[in-house]
Image 1: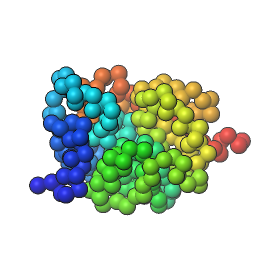
Image 2: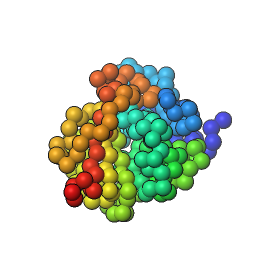
Image 3: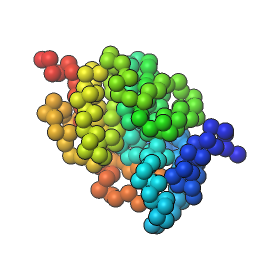
Length: 225
């Protein structure tokens, strides 16, 4: 039987995808981290018209662990020193996977930020599943300006979201953008620091071309040299 918080999470999923269900799953390469995500056997065929309209109007992005977020979580699991003892934020948190991985890696403070109320709820539920204590906010303007590291994973799927980069840069010593859908963040202050292969989980037919994740990093210290 699902925990009441997972029942509520499933009810939020049903507003968009009434045939879906929430399953608690372990993630590839991260056996100690689990999330409540949409069922892996969700039908991948054409959706009925009314459901497609609901998906477009209110996409449940939080019901997936997107490939770039998974890549960051795996990277943090292998390199906890990147965030250990540091103040960290996950902008565009979705399922909360990056925030949870950062806290498990020893970050002293972690904030999950997303303008989707359902994503914030999913992040809360998933943080509880993993026994970690993180904070939440709904807008980049609510983040503190003294962060050590700020992550943006799979946020640049929409061109309008590129504007978030300039808003995020002043907030942290390091801004790390992970994305499989862009080859450049179009800002010479960033450099490519890591590449990884990861697909969205569950993978409901995502194209193989999106398995290659690049990490773009802005480091405030190097800009002052």
